[in-house]
Image 1 (cartoon, rainbow over the protein chains, first blue to last red):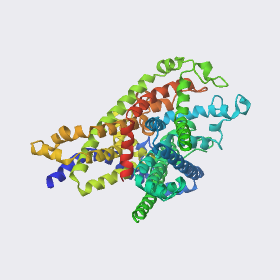
Image 2: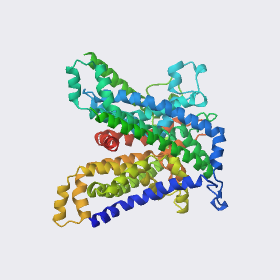
Image 3: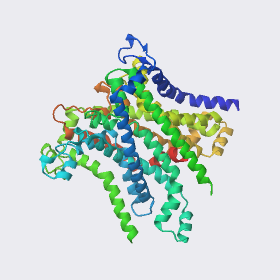
Image 4: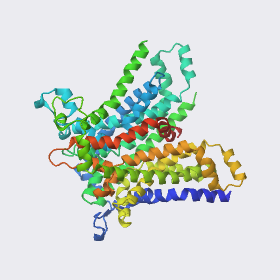
Length: 295
Length: 271
């Protein structure tokens, strides 16, 4: 018994060291640094402890507040649409038909494309002169062409479209796995009882799909808090900070301006946002499981 | 009859949704400069390879491909070795704290990158590992281990314990039993985990951007994101580089589709 303990420890140790050095220690260090003032690239200037100053600055920084708002809008719009389209895709992929295997492979393509490539791709599609969107909307009438990525009202919408395109397949895969775990005899029983397809969906599929939907919701929300590549490539947070999501703002402060103390305060805020979301979803998940087990 | 018509319609819709933007990128890369800027846009390109030639010659595309291959390959290899050791211990020994470790990995995988980026940069700076392959690979290993360990644990749990016990009775050590008996049986899972880690490392941008500031060691996503262009963007070259960065992934994904879907849902739905 003892030797298996030691062996298990030995097997886990190498990977734990990586996690400890490059994930656990950094998160604690970020927390500590958020109470300091320090220049990232000039560490010899020293660290000065400033208490809660970074956080109080954050609360009065109009850019940070707007950035939080942008992040919440981004999440609030992308996640419901992703889940809706993902559910639709999963329902189609769950049907038996010729070519289903091929379609399942095709659905993986947006997921497999590097996000930076997807960003450049959508940047070109939204281009003010040669973009496909402009041509589809206005034909050859170039005088009416829009520059969505340079327009504060449209830039965020453009990034949201690109994000939905890229990540819906992942939501669809999780939901599809949930659909496949629903036993066929439930549908057969519903058919015997004369249920319409809509009634089957409403009273069999949806309740049993709840755990998978919650899981997709959890993964996608936490991931969309990290949106960065699209913003970096398509708009650099602009125009006029219209797409300046928190992860990008934290990057700009820490690595653009070298203000690691303030950047860490932003980082810690994002961290606690995702932690709270995760806990809230996990509670909902547990509740839905308990409910699901009751007959 | 009505049902199948709707199904065909939806299937075609999904396929178009997934393929059209990407196909547009590929078609753009095969155009000539005149075709690229034509209004109305030309649907079919002349399969002119000028942008590929330019991306290779003027922008050193192959160099970025090489850097990405080194970084993603090394990350996948090391992550799979370390992750297999951990997953084996978790699946076989069934100790209480190994489950706690799995939970810890799940929490770690949810950290936003920005929340660890600053200290990671400082650590690599101290080690003088900024702008080195090992620096980026070390960070990637830590980022990939959670997902890899989860997937590998799922697969290792499916290898029947009796086979391994027989090997132990025959005088194999634990480590021998692992690589002579368990590993071959878990090979599909290991391949899947390796593939997912490779794809992730090949696509990763945020850490590559902050760790690799020297163009000689930059990976493809950084090269593509920072494509130089002061007044006019070299869209054709960007499209060509993007296509080259993506084609290997699309092929891998199409070939290993089943494994990838299983791997992605292994961590997700079992929980």
